[in-house]
Length: 182
Image (cartoon, rainbow, N blue to C red; front, side, top):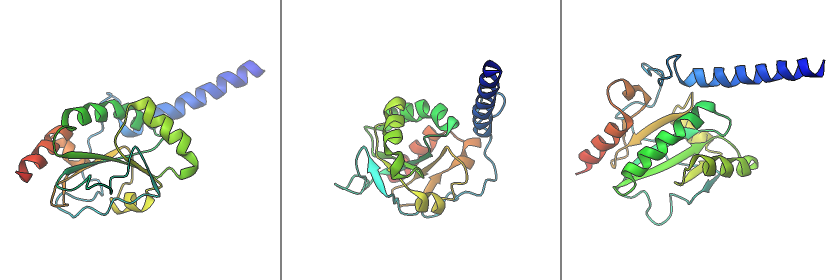
């Protein structure tokens, strides 16, 4: 009886994980096409980056964001697709970290999850500033799903969002924002 319960529980957990991954990715394993999502649109002014607290540094200190293209990544510790996407974000960060690009992570996870947040960041190799308890900013960005990414030009306007994936990659969006700043 105990063995049957354990097997059933494992099947439910596996099903939940697969469903979570499927929400962010299509059955073919590619990121779902993101068209006509109710996002903060390209050309709109980005909202302020606010959080209850910060891990890996506070981006509002030492002019960290000044004159830079900003890449904002929305994620959560419980989000399977966020974990799947993290290696790509680290790869993109490594490609642009020596240019005028700042990466900022935002999660709605609260301070009581700080040990899990730090563990998640360490396990995924994410070293850039991440704000926790960022519910107001995520709502202002119209983040109705995660993971989700925005690129903000140095003028403070959205240059790239998830709807942009159908026409250009995140890397191309960042490069375009850098080119606009020159």
